[in-house]
Image (cartoon, rainbow, N blue to C red; front, side, top):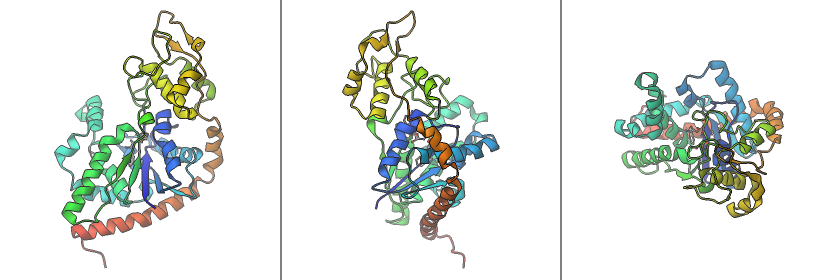
Length: 333
Ligand code: TYM
């Protein structure tokens, strides 16, 4: 079976709707036909200097949400990145194949470091995409299901894989393909519907956490920014708010945009009252059972993560040994 790898950072208590629709839904769908590995990338999270107790807690919570969303540990390996030391080892090797200029061109790094200034940034943030490439290449990954914001990072992973094959010989690395589903590749902030939904960018009201109380989710949807006319139509350019709600509706409900559009009765769009239009309506919220799901699976977590790390490590060792040998590192006797 071809292989799938993807991962999320344990940087919040709850995943948000962008993580869920942009990535997690596809992880679940792909596990049938692929040999799948899904990671909680705690080493990546270190780049934002999390509080230690919080990082530990969020690592478990993030894994629990993978399972609650339908990642099945019988079919997929779920593990914590730091439990598989090969990730950091391969990242070092790959860093010696990465151009300084190449790494400097990563837009996420440029955006993040522009925000905090040079003194606030760290080398880990700079080499973040190299560690990500290590995550992917370590498992000879064919397909990487992610949201649009990871496209450039994946491009670097592909370039590195090709470079390994050129310099170290064919068969050194598998060149991974992105799996980015157009309709859900970018879920937008409910308050600023031209920006992507993100835990760091949002003021909170524009973000839907999948573990949020259904009532609060409904409220956030009802107070989502739309526009001043009453027409419900999909048009990213002129109607970003309405289009964003239609995408979310359609993605959750499995209806086409057009069906979703007709499912929103006209009277649910309230006339503007001196501010931006508000679109109330019948938009569903994420399945509330996910909340119970998190509790239910918590007990199984340790076993799942242990087994996941052991099996992942066995695959990773093989790849690392192959590459260590090809670059000329002396094998310990
Ligand atoms: P992270 O933890 O920021 O996000 C996890 C996943 O959610 C997707 N995503 C979105 N999709 C659609 N709309 C949005 N608004 C939105 N916000 C987030 C992300 O694209 C991602 O798929 N660098 C990665 C973690 C990572 C990784 C990897 C991923 C590390 N190593 C190897 C794949 C393969 C990240 O920060 O994701």
